[in-house]
Image (tube, rainbow, N blue to C red):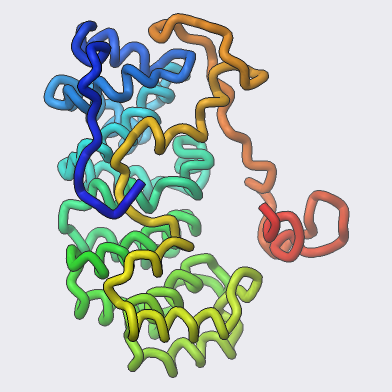
Length: 310
């Protein structure tokens, strides 16, 4: 997982020894399909059409069976590793769906990889990307992840710096997000990481007004980020806390899902093309608002308790 543009592919015999249909079928099964993932990237010309089809169906709100969902989820990451820019519009359509639908389709990937999916698939349509950041009805984590991606794309010079500046000004003026929404923190970080010093008074005003959640951010952090941007703008390490970059190795990117192999997290030794219902990640806070009482019983607000500690 880096900011580079090289796609990691495998030259191992396993990527060539089976028909592509066998590898595509393995995406829907268990155990974790290392070989199939690598093969679909290495032989993307053959895998492209069915993987795009699954993404298009999900983006259109079509029902997916459990095996289809697993193929879609893994396939989306394959599309990203292959830099399939033609899938970018479909990804944005998916992310525009209702928050519940987006959570059902992406689960923990909302926090883990959406920003990197966007960076990897970005086709240059900055208007569509930033419009979704500003969409009040979109999932709040999606909006924040997209703005994090836009920050990185701007730093890479793949998104126009002046356009980003205008967007940040308009966002503060129109306020298309409730106070303490995650996207406000990303907005603040955009100003610092991209060294938009003329917008610092605007950030200070928003900070004092309580628009930015202080659970994960101190004012001093903003100052440090701004200082580093001025002295080391080209240093990619400044973005490490955002975990942004491109998806280069699809197996490494999906390593966190390997425990889906069996209910107890062990490898039961099924054939890759076989299938048993995967155990999707469950978010215990899905229906808990940040200002609601924490379900752990502490009496604190969720945002000050378990949501803050993960």
